[in-house]
Amino acid sequence: MASVGALLMFLPVAWTCSPQKADYVMVSCFPNAIIANVPECPYGWEIDQLSLGGVCYSGIHSPGYYRFIISDLTPKNHSYCGTQSEYMPGKDPKYIFYNSIVSNDTSLTVRNQPVNYTFSCMYRAAYLVNNAVFSQRVATVYVNNGSLGTFRSQLSMNVFTNSKFLYAKDAPYVIDTSEIGSEVFIGIEAKGLSNRFKVVINNCWATPTPYSTDKKRWSLIINSCSSDGTVTIFENAKDSRSMFKFNSFRFQRLEKVSTVWLHCEVQVCDGDRLICHPGPCSLRSLSSEAEPSGGILTAEFHIKGTEHHVVYTF
Image (tube, rainbow, N blue to C red; front, side, top):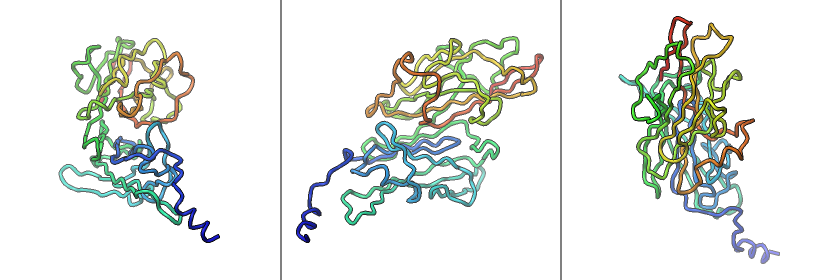
């Protein structure tokens, strides 16, 4: 029996996934969450053998990647799945969040190269407790080291003057109430990334409160498709900028509500590894949104009475 046991120790490994050299991590630092993606099956590791901070086995298997999400960025003395935060005082105080995705094999023998993907995100210290987000209007996207090189990008959402999307409007963006229903042009762009990375708009919706999870909402884009004829998507997932337009509006029977928030769930897709462009909308359902795979950018609309204005601020 001992000889049989010894023989089993030297049998070839039966991989349940195809090992690949995964020498980089793509990190998106959104105001409300940090999303880290590593290529699937890195050096042969299964998703249930990788943990966030050595604590949480919370990875999600998305196409081509294992995704780990830090959904609590509350800057106080506790750690979320091993996340550590550091406050940096000064004229422009900041918070830095640190964590890592590490391998852990509890079996008797370790057959794979250990991995440790360490990453960090920096935020200006202004934290909106009621919204559970940092006040910055952009997301920072990093591709750290490895075969892709190192990239840093600012992912931002802006209002443009027309469908040419050449000039972004300065905040505050004002629409006279007599012009409710006029066209609003939105562009979401990542600057500084390699051409292989595409900006994908998954979902966009509006709420009468700053909470993106508010059940009172009006959907504009669902599963990368226009929700109705008032929304036109010009480009999505083709390059580093995606654009759409919608007709301006206000919520009915909420006359006392002076602000409306626009939220867009977006992600950056590696076009060399994945098919980033969504399939035809006729083949996909608009009845329900898919499981979120990106982070959220938010724009704020201030609405006043019939003699006031609608103001878009970013």
